[in-house]
Length: 460
Image 1 (cartoon, rainbow, N blue to C red):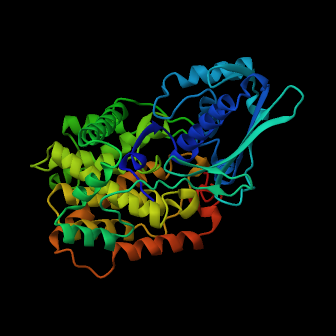
Image 2: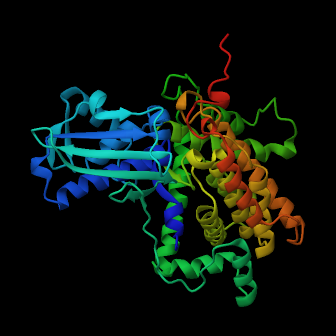
């Protein structure tokens, strides 16, 4: 299956790619289907049922608001997060939702959005069923969707199974394993970024690829700037205080009395970058899914580290970083998972760490073997990580987890660049291990808020 870099990295809104971006896109598709099927004028009521992880933590992850915006025809990359609160208030106050922005129908959030906390659909933990009814209460149209991680949405067939739309676009250098990718690099004397760039040209021109990547980098920078200027508490009831703004002020004042060593000052900035992004994500702001929202701070933090602290940093390095990170993301998507509801947080933050480590190693001149080694180190030390958000919110431990993973990614790249690329455990073996570990992991540790930190917080 051919996967584009721009499917792994896409602009959306927080706080969750699988719970917000995916459901919004699924709801938008459903609304669009009502239009194309000629059913719109007959629809008098909508109902959306959320199952598995969507049902268990959807309220904390903003799934309901995302679904309502999707039903009104909004796209995750275009919806204005600043306007969403007022629009949601309008829907709730008047009880009317405009399907695809064209046809108003009755919509009562408490009745028409159903969260099944303990019930799952058979094909994937993130399942949702959308239904449209006529004035007599008869179901006119029903569709099942699965949000499979990173904002990817898969339709279901008539019998409820996954209807995977595999992109069979021919690529000059197809690969489905790290071993195959390294072989292509050796045989054609190309870097991993070269391979990915050539494959991306199956969909876009070189100019479009370049401008698209730089646009993603622009959104990442804007997200960091927004994060360091917003203060107060994050929404959701945990009363988590935003820290990025105060950390930024203290760094700019250069009066860090708690700094362990001046030589480690870059760590404070890396933490700042990651905290800023993930606080914006938790607040429902605009971010770049990389490769998920829960792990959206890692790649931007390491990219900022490259831009601000690596002496030879330039736009070409940004391109190499993103293309290489995208290639590693393809391997995770095809051979394991990037869904916290499927394999735990190892699939989200672990994948992001590996992608960022590989990107940094490539941007700073690493060989293909060193890049693969960096990705392997980054993922190896996240194996078994559970997804256990307190209160079902993408805040604790998610925000700090991104900062720690960003530092790990940089360390992984440094370790790989100090070696010659030869190492005992391959990235392919780690990917296989991650997938098997996810299968063995109890469901309560996979984005349900029914295990781990989510239930073991002692209140004093």
